[in-house]
Image 1: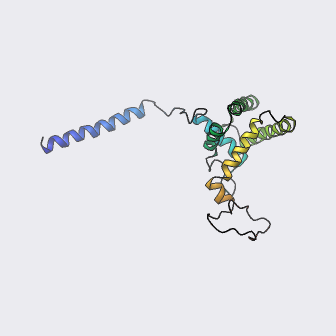
Image 2 (image 1 turned 90 degrees about the horizontal axis):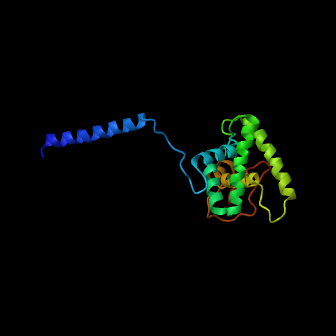
Length: 190
């Protein structure tokens, strides 16, 4: 094989790659709703991100979405919740979506910040009433589970620990008499 044949074949290979990619892009193929784990899809994680961002919105500090709390919630529910709690959580999320759609005639993700906040505040009152009357062996309300995993995911994330809380990398010495002034950020670690 001579040099011209090698260049010709490489050109054919590269040209085929470009044409093949263009055909794929123009064929209408788009991303699918991929499975994140056994319980949740990517669209569920996006919903969790929006719910978490409504609970902990970005202000002068980053919000829950910046900490990727949605992915954390999906992982925690699958890996740490009992099968019964997973069912309560999944059924509750479906109920949340259906209730929001019924009340506002749109999906939670497309709802306004005011609609989301009002809806979640009503859910929070519902879960508080449920939690105060539930028996010990009954599962927690799904919205309580969602709030707890949101807070845990945010404040244990790098964003939450370093941008919202005060953080000193460990190992370090323990100082039980560290100065604290009213209004200072809480400590992420000691």
